[in-house]
Length: 305
Length: 305
Image 1 (cartoon, one colour):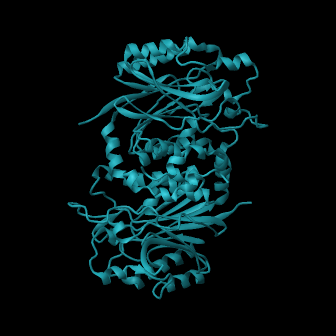
Image 2 (cartoon, rainbow over the protein chains, first blue to last red):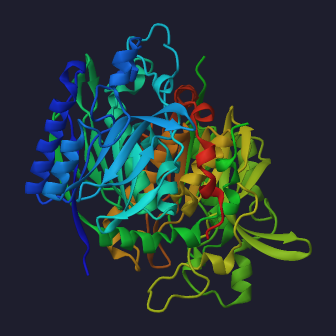
Image 3 (cartoon, rainbow over the protein chains, first blue to last red):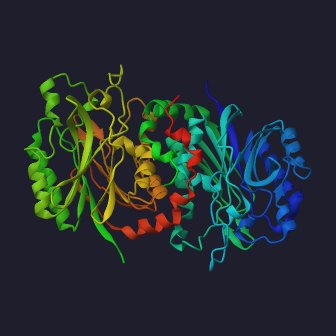
C-alpha cells in the first residue's frame, strides 16, 4: 500500500514594513489556491511569514514593534487565511511572531503553527535555537538580534499525527542543529516543515558567502537521511529592507536527495509528491531505536561547562 | 599565524585471508613512506587494516578467528610499522581487531590506535556503533555480523592533543551518526580520523545502491560543518573475499567541502594540506557552547523506551 502526500514549500518574496497584514495574507491565500490546483494537501510557509524580518535592526518605536506580533492565532487579520484553508481543504504551517501571556507576564516567541485542512490549529512550535546577539555588534552593516526580541522556545520539538503522516516543525537556525532532526525523529516524526529568513551574505563571515546555499541544504539533507525524514523548507526570499535573502526553498527525501527546489526569489510554490513509504523503508533499515548507543550520548544533553 | 598540517587517508585495496600480516604491514609501510615523501605528518589507515573484513561470514574455525585478533599493539608482527613511523617521523591511525583481557575475561573490540611520529601509541578508540546481526539473516548472500565478534566500545569518544591539533577517532558505521561528531567536538576535537569497510552494495536494501557514495559523504560533510571539524576517511576498497567495497577515501574541511578524494580502488594515498585556522574560524562563528540548547536535548541521551 503506497501512502502518498503532495506538499509544497510556499516561498515568499520580501515583505516590507509598509505592506500590512491584508496584502501579505492575500499573497498567502493566492499560494494556497495554487497549491490546491497543484493537488497539494499541505503548504509550508516561511518563518515570520507576516512581517519583515525586523531583528536585523533596532526597533525603538514600541508601536512599530507591537505591530509585528500576534497575540492570537488566528486573529482578525489572519482569519481569512484560515478560512481559505478550510474552504480549499489545504492545510499549512505558518511562522509568525507570537506575543504570549504566561503567569501574568508577557513573553515573545518566534513561533509557527500547523493548521489542518479544516482551518483549525493542530499545534504550535516555538523556535528553540534563537541566534544572534541582544545588542548591536559594532561595525556590522546588518545586525542579527533575535535574542533581543524573542525568548528561547519552551515547547520542545512536538510531533503531531496529521495529513496521514507524523509532522514536526522547526524554524530557520534550528535546521543547522543535528539535535533538531534527532529529537523530532525520536518523537516519531516522518515529515518536517521548516521556515527560514536567511541572509544571502554574512557581513561577519564573508568567507562563507559562496557556500550559503550549500550550508543551507547540507544539514537538512543529512538530517533527513540520518533520521528517515522528509523535509520541506520554505524561504522568505529576495531583497527585503535592503537585505538580500537566500531563496532555494526545497523538498528533501529520506534518502537525503533533493526532490524539488525553487527557481526564483519571489512568491513561488515548490511542489513535491512524497511517497511516505520511502520514509518507512529508510526507517526500518536504520533501526534507530535498536542501533543507537544512548549510554555514550550523555555529554550532548549535559549543560555546557 | 597559520597552523598547517598535511595529512593523508591511506586507502587500502583488499586483504585476503591468505595474505598474512607481513605482507599487509609491508603495504602499510609503503604508504607511510609515500606519505613522508608527500610531506604528510599523519596517515589515517582503514578499519580492520590488518585482516579481511571477516564479519561478513561465519568463522567457525577457532584458530582462524583467533588469527584475526591482536592481543597487543604493537605485537611482534606489527612492530615494524611502528618502527617505520618512528624512522620516518610520520604518525598514523590504524584499525584492528582487539583481543582484550578485562577482569580476567576476554573481550573483543573493533578498535583503532592513534600513533605519534615517535612510533608510540597516543590513545585507543573502540567502535561504539557496531552494526549488523549476531546470527546470519536467512537468504542474504553476504552477511554483516559484527555483533557476533565484537562488543560495543566502552571508551567513549576520546580526544587527544597531538600533531599540533586535537584528534579523535571513529570507525565505519560511527560516521553515519551525528552524535559521533557532536561528542567529539564537545570533547574538543578539531580533526577526526575515520576508517571503514563499506560494502558497495546492500543485499538487503538494493534501493540504496546508487546512493552509497552520497550516503558515505553526506553525514561526514554535515558532521564536519556542524562541528567545525576536519575529517579524514580511509577505505578498505576493491573486491575482498568476493565482495565489492566502497572506495572514495576522502578529506573534508570544516566548511563541509571535499578537499580530496581517492581516484582508484587500491592502495592509494589521498593527501590534503589542512589549514587548521579554518577550523578555528568556523568554531568561533558557530559558538557551539554558547548557542546549543542542551535543556532541550534530554531525549537524545535517554535510553530507547
